[in-house]
Length: 489
Image 1 (cartoon, rainbow, N blue to C red):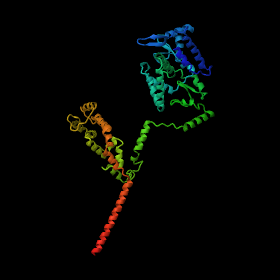
Image 2 (cartoon, rainbow, N blue to C red; image 1 turned 90 degrees about the vertical axis):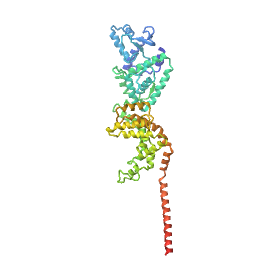
Image 3 (cartoon, rainbow, N blue to C red; image 1 turned 90 degrees about the horizontal axis):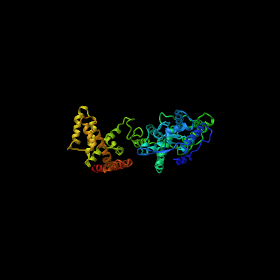
Image 4 (cartoon, helix red, strand yellow; image 1 turned 135 degrees about the horizontal axis):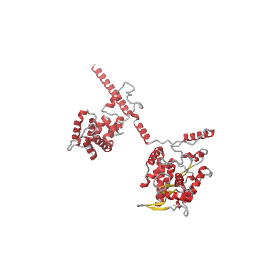
């Protein structure tokens, strides 16, 4: 324990202003804590045997109170507990069983904080550091490392705030976990509790005293915005330390120099190209591009736009049984698009009949029609569908899983328009994942698609050549008729 504290202590960096009010207070507290941990005059740090485990490197709260009364010339236990609670609130020692940093005069076990995490090292962790810590805690499959309710809420909030860089945070946490797993089990247990106590100081539990809320260091740092901050995982630059929940520290005062710095900062931000589109926006853009040519307000339809003219030829073509190339191509977008088009529905039904699985689509269409039935006809129609598709020996029996079958049979005890909802969803998923994919690869759909893909110029050229041929035939016939008439005369 002592060795690990020394290793950690070598990493910290002290405040250059040793005469600051905070630093003077910290030095006095650290002198007391160092004396408490002294091997000869301090409290004996021991390993306590529990029911099935051992608790390493702990002391009791009554031991700390007794030592303070003896060595700090304190007469009342309440005064010793008050001073001890002030020291615990700064994180110099902490209870191992809860997140409340206070001193109790009983058998509660306490552990001393590693010098690496002492406040004199000028810690000011960012929300990214806290997110890494909480994410790392979730990777530990230990009951003692489970997140408290307020920590789970903080993790969810940080995940929303850092959505664009969460992958980086997760990778950092994963790397920390791999490093921790290489350490000794007892050492890892102690270090985990010390890191938890560090965050109990800087991100305290609700209702606890936040000793960093009104910190003199923050007031002093307002005058020195160029100073670099310290992160739990090393030094980070001030300009890169802003998080989504912190506002910029530039231009706190309306001086000319501060405003010029803010202008430079904002111009730099304008030149950055860091736009990252979310998955939802990407899906929306893909959907918009896919259906763009089917929107008459964006792309003018042929032969004309019925919304801006009196010509309804476009609607007549859409309702005809001879689909255009656009309609056939649209069937390949999804099964829903194929079933919405009557022509596409008929073509898909013909394909299923060729595979001897048309009962699936017939059942789906029957349920769709069943949902639009009047209420007085619902019970009778529900029994008809059951007898045709689901009963034993049904003429068009469909293949349902046991869960959907049981739910449907229960629903038919009091039939309603949505009694077959589970069965219909199951059949739809079967058609979508199996039959529909084969239909798109089938010759029936490919031939229909290729037939509709003939270029308009080729068709126009064929019409032109046909017209020329007709004219030539007409001229020759007319010449022959004239010759015959002249010969007869």
